[in-house]
Length: 132
Image (tube, rainbow, N blue to C red; front, side, top):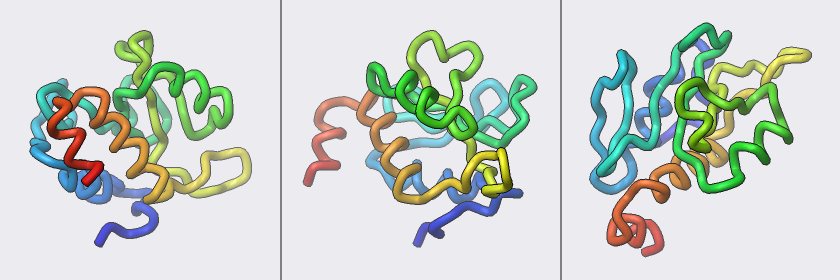
């Protein structure tokens, strides 16, 4: 069972469990970070990657989602280096809810974001499995 919130000091096991719960997902190290693939990469763990102050993940996102979420909550969402121009979304995992900082990650929200990322790259037959 996935905990409702990750351990802010080590959110990797929590994110891994969410990603690997999806059909035919594999984990590999890509560019030095744990990353999850279904045909192509859809999520990559980013531990203080490229100077970002937080532990986060980068993921594929449907058109317009990156802009919407970054505008709505820039403490929790960001445009990641290298892939942000392709619409990928950066999501902070180590938020503690401290004043002025990002809120703690929520399992339901992160599962939804990861599932949307999966749908962006998965073959139609695999994405259809999510619909029952």
